[in-house]
Length: 234
Picture: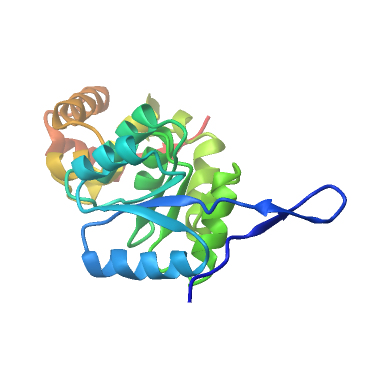
């Protein structure tokens, strides 16, 4: 049975004209997941106007449809963060919320830097997703609770973190810290580029700068130096 559109109220408490349902674009590689999200959000009053299975398709659909809200999978083929950047630039009125399979502080910060209004986990409880997306549309933060500590750490001074080596502080930029953390995880240049939403060339530039600051000869040596050093905040 079709749901009636939400009804607004006038200042005197009388029923006003029906509110237009929020239009939504779902960008995720997996059709089954898209179908589940579509069913859930349509039941909660959203109007799903389009779906996309790749970054390029998501950008094209967002530009064509101009949805109120766009859900973008962080692992979208073609780079979800690249899609976020392009949609934010080409459809600025669209509220973008990233969905991720697991908590990722680096991905969270990269998504927010590129114009996303939120970062949620795919395991978000049914019923909470619609409520959170509506809040995001109104300008409220849409963040998974597990991601809040990473954001607080960043705001409190993460860009000013330094590495203490042999008693001497080595300043690294926020992006160089991102690269350093991913290097310590054993990530390749392409994997880092996908996680950070950067081109491989830009990632290599940050790696080279970090290696030079650490006085290392290559990235492998830099990882050993990073493990020996002690992070320090100003």
